[in-house]
Length: 248
Image 1 (tube, rainbow, N blue to C red):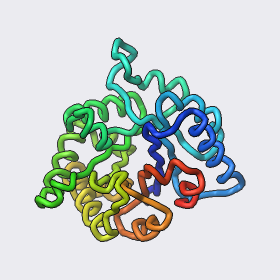
Image 2: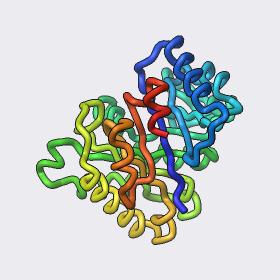
Image 3: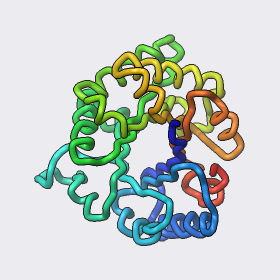
């Protein structure tokens, strides 16, 4: 049975007070309530400690938006898994389109990050997705296939079992546009089939594949009703407690 995951990517959008207020709002909203879903938030690295202090002991897991694939070393501005382990953090977001697009992170470099994260006993969520130009040129499956083949190379069948994937069409991130449930399902089905060919059918069937790209309370049900969509990696709607809670 695949795990359903609702994950909030707060990106670089909140100051400290806003991040703490958001964490308090989520904590309060989930108090005395149970959800069958895995709930996960990715604050800015500078806010992880404050958010951890609020959400520690709740059912909300905390992750980091990025890591550098190295032990503690001279990499200015980066974050090591060793530092995250001080807070018992296990989750890492890898390959978000904004890091691919604006910071030039390649499939090969993201593969290094995934391998290192798994070696360190942490749990990566690997983001993939095509641009509008690539979709209009009918290259969606070529792009997704390469991101999966290269990004997941040299990873054992045992290690990959903890990994989840977030399919985020770049043209739908932060734009208000959203893939139709049918478009999203088509991409998710391709991803699951590709995972089957890279690893095996059991791993493919049990891997959680999330949709990201303008997920909101008013469209989450239609997306989640699709056979191969196992949750959402949410941007804007995760940055207000009422809309994030409404997704659950």
